[in-house]
Image (cartoon, rainbow, N blue to C red):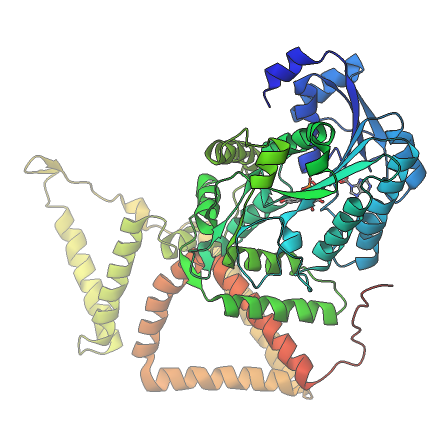
Length: 562
Ligand SMILES: NC(=O)c1ccc[n+]([C@@H]2O[C@H](COP(=O)([O-])OP(=O)(O)OC[C@H]3O[C@@H](n4cnc5c(N)ncnc54)[C@H](O)[C@@H]3O)[C@@H](O)[C@H]2O)c1
């Protein structure tokens, strides 16, 4: 369907309601309907008032010209829906994803009971067509691949999540409501919707990338998937609204898969998004079973602790990311007249543009790494974190020379120090005879003040020494009072360790400390996020094991329904 032909063809404005019209797909649909020019649009959503932003210019114009209006509607409240839908021809019911997934009862009330209310309200207010924004997830059980799946696919007996189960129930209600009291219905099952303003899939990828997880590929990376650009989902809805009238026999009471008609490797798509937003593309492969096991374990612990599960989305992502899921849209093409209006490539490009602008707003602050903070964020940190490679390398070289001089020259420590001072004095005296230019090169002389120590530096140093000394004295004083065994073991243990190091091999110890300082902090800074998350997973796994060994009496498991 061409926008221009619609504009020119019908001058009579039809009234429609977009329920959930302030959500990701809802906004896009509202704006497309208004741009088409032959609809009066009632935007209905749960917000008490309408908050417009920069992306709402089309809606803003329509509101002022009377071609759009806003209605505060909670789908749990039928009279509100009746009021908003009265006298309208079509209701596009977008549904919600922004629900607290751990509160099953609330989700049930919004998704299933809400759909019952919408159907009943549409009947009561004489609505002709009801189109439900369903999801391709309703035929996916998380374990069996779907290749070129069409509408003959049966629903799984068990769903990957409770929300998908509710969504499938809502879809059934919509289909069964068809052709009763003059209401015609159909459902559109789009597969992985993305686009500007996405609230689910792309933000999830961005969060993964920010936390360093987007480097990982779950499984072989060969699995294919179908994605749908949001504008195409909206176009499909409008096609369905027209087809319910013109092709009722094949459309009413049916469901249709909607995609961009271009299956791609799931990981190619993710790489495009992640790399396009400036993060490294996924490259490290992880076994599917391992990832699923870790997520199941974490989900189980959280549920046991009564915290709800934060890992639902992650678990679903892992299933989606490791399975093949492609759909056949022949029915939508044939009966709805649907073909994508935006290609996958163009869709990815505009999504990246939108999210890049969004990310720029938040990237102004410079975040200091933990390694930097541990090292005091000063000159030592700069040196050990290799901020200036030449400086760090020279420092490392000099320290190694000193080390060799003091420990491996065959002299005692005192004679090594005396020899060093002697060489230093000779070098200083010799500097006086060096000409200011050698073979045309300027020789820079170090001014004597560079070797002076300022009074304030001496004061700071002596203050630090006094503080450390007093702390030591307080420690020994509290030791003399007795009774604190932990403190005793800490102090005695450290002193004994020091004695061992000094008596056995101070040289080996210093060499280890030196090599460690110049490498460990640097490596830690490079992989800080990954190490942090690995440590978190490790600690959570330990907690699970601990709970298995020592069951906590107070732990409650959350019931599915209240
Ligand atoms: N995003 C995807 O990848 C995707 C894919 C396929 C299908 N879907 C389906 O599309 C639907 C909409 O998805 P979305 O991404 O636009 O969701 P969204 O979360 O961005 O928007 C949902 C809207 O519903 C409103 N809402 C929430 N509770 C409500 C209530 N009780 N009464 C009235 N309005 C309420 C919210 O205010 C919000 O504006 C969902 O049902 C989802 O299952 C989404």
